[in-house]
Length: 451
Ligand code: UDX
Image (spheres, rainbow, N blue to C red):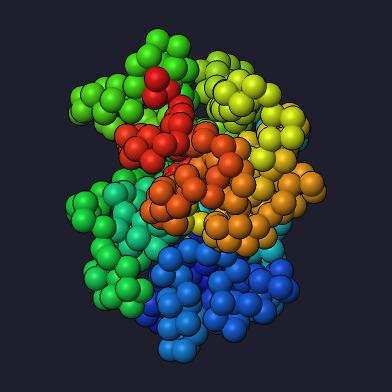
């Protein structure tokens, strides 16, 4: 089993994480990355994004020679027994999924692969994509087996999620191929503790026996986007209730604690705040709306979730504007440019949107993130000042907005903050702070739906 050669195509969050985990399980793994900058960094043992534990696993697997990193597509594909496709599927301007990279990979695999290999689709694709690619594979001389194996890892906890997973979904019409893929995950499960030890990360306490789910190809594809769309729905639902809580004096955190205590509902992903961002939820929701439309199905529930989500940064900006009696010339610090804590990813980041909106309304915006300053810089208005330290961001400001719950922000010295700020407004756009503590130092607390 272990002498089989695995190829992972694409060193993004999913590809790099999957490659280092499989390599540290002892699989002979190759990682194909065509971007020369990323390739150079990876070969020297440096991940091109911030993700806890990944650097340790990358270095270990390069050292043990279990992982080869290359840009030689032809050679890499020719020698592979199992190919994991982990390339990006960004959204087109109309919201549909751009499948160029996925189809390019499929074409290269058809051209170069040896016979009887397994092709595993990990990229998030609209339902029906696998069936189209599989028609080509079935006609090919090599008899390539197609397996859909959607990825559920979250950025910020990518390694934990890849080692301690709730479920593995495998969809294929080739039972033997599906079983081979399941066996890889079983081996990862068996090596879980050992790999956790290499990273220094703590094993997630909640880990239970992982569930293995086998389905047909199209169902596996639909499971992935439905799961993400449902989580996005939960967030937008909480944000809708938060707006009502603001008007009625209720506290959305207390409301969601009690609503989520019903096991049928569950508490997770009901945190109201500045809304969701990142490389998955926004594009997966718009991709699902678009692919449903291609099948003649309307998804008004997802259209509404998107509208609510897109309204949140503007909602927060206008509440700050009202509180400060206008934003013209007001100094506002936005803390948190990553789309969430634990990652340097600033794609579709609500913190970035918020900073741009505050700037547009006339505020003098300073922004700071411990890891995402560089990634966010391209999307921030050029007049927004990006600062390299928290302290610098906070001096003399009229208001501070916390848009990402980095530990550095959650542990902020509130007494000192109240002294170095000029004004008093503390806007908690993540609803992460105990407002009595903020008020105790003389600051004015505002959250989203916290009365
Ligand atoms: C998501 C899915 O969780 C994961 O299973 C899938 O593989 C990829 O997409 P990710 O985008 O990394 O993962 O982050 P996630 O933790 O799900 O958060 C997404 C966004 O929702 C973040 O901006 C986060 O701050 C926001 N969020 C999350 C909320 O606003 N409220 C919540 O209650 C939870």
